Structure formats: C-alpha cells, structure tokens
Image 1 (cartoon, one colour):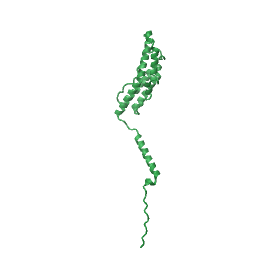
Image 2: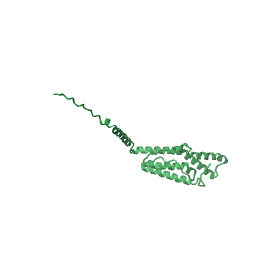
Image 3: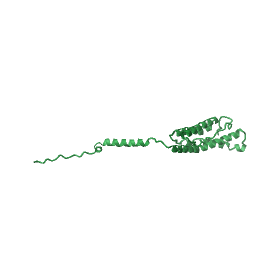
Image 4: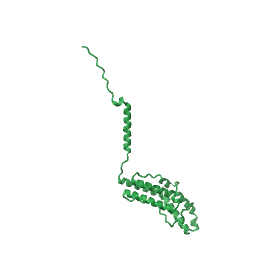
Amino acid sequence: MTVTDAAPVTKKEPIWQRHRRLAIVAAVLVIALITVLTDLPTSTSRASDIAAERSVMSEVNSDLQPCAYAVRQAVGIWALQAHHQLSAAERAPTPGLLSDDQSACSFTNQGVYDLSNVQVPGTPAGKKLGQLLAVALLWTTSDSLRAEAQLASDRRNALADENAADRDLGIHLQPVNLPPVPATATPSTTVPAS
C-alpha cells in the first residue's frame, strides 16, 4: 500500500481580499448613502419654527433700528423746516444731521450690512419673512432716500408679508420696525439730500 501525499488544501481568501475594488466601491457607496440620509431635511416642530421666526424678527428689528431712527429724525426735521418752525440756530446742524441720517440708511452702516446677511429658515413662514427682509432692505437703502409714497408702499408690503408669516405660524410675531411716514411730513415727493 502506498501512501500518497494529499493535495495541499488552499484556503479561500475572504471576498473583500479577493476583490479589493468591489470592497472599495461598496465602502464609498455606504459613505455616500449615509451622507445623503443625514442631509435630508427633517420637519421641525411648531415651537422651533416659532422660535426661529422670532429670532429672525429680533435680528431684523435690531438691524433696522439705526435707519428707522434716522428716517424719523429726517422726516421730523423736514416737517419742522417745511412749517418754518426751526430757528437759525436749530437749522445750523441740520445738514450734518441729515448726512448722518443718510449714512445710517446705507450699506456703510453695520446694521444695514447685517440686515443683508440675515438667514431665514426654509419654512413657509420663513419664506414670508424672507420677502419681508427683501422689502426692509429696499426700504432702508433706497426708499429712505426717495419718495415718501414709496416708503409707505414698501412698509405696507413688509407688514403684509409679516401678517402672512403670522398666519402660517398661527401666532403674532413682533412687528417689523419700519416707521410710518406721515403723508403731511414732506411737502414734495423727495427727502432732501445733504
């Protein structure tokens, strides 16, 4: 009887070692799938929507404050001048005040610059606040230097956008800080430039 040597047993390597490309492609696909799934939008609670919208309105009003004050001051000065109620001593600083007011409503003012960078949520109410933000930016930068009728029109549009956001949320957010311009404040259609 002869003993034959048994054929050496070859150990089969795992599939990921035999097909490295397949393993690399599978790993990349798993990572891509995880990335896509974690980036999908998730619905937010009503409370978090309200908190986000309130935060936006607080930031908008804070950024609008210097220009709103400047417009009130400029309209007040204009009304007093139009009714000849300013003495020579009171008129003397007027050009400087009006120049400062004009600067407060331009992109050189940090508040107006910050207003142009406010991020609004992607919710339905946030979209309305985005429209309000666009109108408020127009109001501060160009309308405040133009006609009173345009200021009033844009204020009405901003308030309508805010009311639409209020309806979407079912609450009342703080009102946008765009002061009303009385129709009798200016005798002409333009605010004087410095």
